[in-house]
Structure formats: C-alpha cells, structure tokens
Length: 141
Length: 141
Image 1 (cartoon, rainbow over the protein chains, first blue to last red):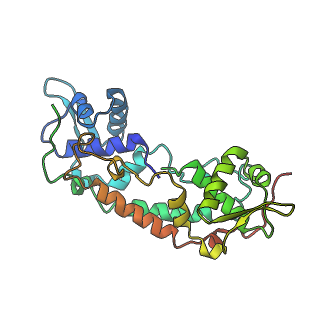
Image 2: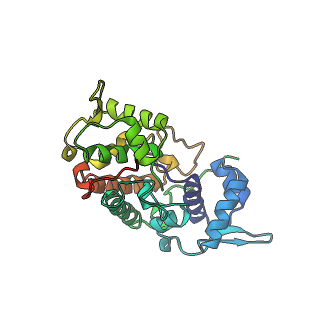
Image 3: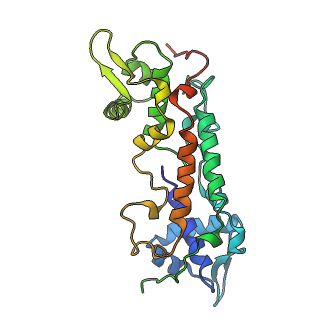
C-alpha cells in the first residue's frame, strides 16, 4: 500500500514551497529531496496544471504555491496526483465480468470504496498549512 | 492508489473459496480470474503460511479456507498481503533526514498514518463473509 512516487514528490514539494518565503528553483527542490530533475519537472507541471503551484520566469522567478497553504487540502492533492484511485480490480472503470466472474454480486468494491472515502476524509482534515515543519528546513549544500 | 496485485488476487481467491462448498484447485482459480498459475501459487503459499488457507493433497484435495469466513477480517488480509504499508517515504522504516530534510518537524507521516488507520478500521468492519457474492459464481468453461 504505497502512493505513487509522483504523489509523494508532489506532497514534499508543496511542503517545501509552503515553508519558504521566496520562490524556489527546480534545482533547489531536486537537491533537497535527491530527486531527478526530469521527474520533479513532470510533477511540477502537473501541480501547475492543477492550480496548486505557480511557475514564474525571470531573475527572481521560480516555483511557489498558487494559494495559501491553509487552502490546500491533502486528500485533494492525493486525488489530483494519483494516476488511478482503483485500489482493487473491480474499482477500475473497465472492470468486467469476463476478467472477474465475482463481479455481479461481490461486495469487495463497496467495502474498498467506503474505506477509501474514510482515508481521504481523514486526509482532508489536514491542509498543507497543518503539515508544515515547525523547524526551518536545512538543505544540504 | 492501488493495492499490490498479489493482495487483489488474494482477496479474490479468498472470496472464491468462501463461496464454494468443496475445495478448489489452483487451475480452477487461475482460470476463473485469468491469472497466471505461477503468480497464484505464490499468493496461495502466502495465504497458507498466514493461516488463512489450507492446502490438501489427494484425490479430493485442493485449497480451502482455513477458518470460517466470518472470522477473516478484510483489513487484516490487506496488512498481511501488502509488501509495504509505507504510503509515503517518511513511513518507511529506513526513512532518514539525508534523503528528506523535511523529516525533523514535518507532519506528513502523522497525517498519513492516521488516514491509513481510518482505512484499515473501515475495512475491518467487513469480514470475508460480508463480501461473498449473493449469486453463485459462473466460471467460464
């Protein structure tokens, strides 16, 4: 039970940006988490497309949060970033009875959908603001 | 957000066994879900090792549930089968500050641990017995 690595990176990038007063560079975030720049770039592009991060060019440019950290819900970030929320086969939109003959009367999907709602509801009790570190982040030189 | 394929197969194998009066063969379960026998065998070996399934040799042998379906909790099956419950990097036992400088004061782990507990608690409200199909399973010939 693991989130996609991109979701993990997205969460940490948002926390990094949330605890910083000035815009950050891709190089800086990449170095902080020892993540390949190409992977980070893709994650940041998704965060920009989803209206969570703003990317600004220029001398004082970089990436920063698009809105107040208190207005970014963690469950929303997970749902935005995960490529699939289908925990089990029967939650997939293309699930069919040929591949799983249990489908017609099986209650697996219902149990997992309910558990996933509980998971996301719990996460949505936290905003990005709640997750920010109490101590300033020390980034290796 | 997907469970490991082995967990998915384990859940469906348990449901299959739970709705059947007689022991099932590996070939039969493999055909029912169109899953490779080698993969299914590995999953069944884990289920046997975890005391969830019994494998019996002989003419009337096969695999069957080791205990009543009402005594198998779904959250327990997920925890037993998943190779890792570390949703995000900081939940891993080997998480360290060098790889993620957020660690000392970050509250990501706490939020995700809480959400995971809510997820498993919700699943544990269901036993295997609750998930069994109301209609008998039709397996393709």
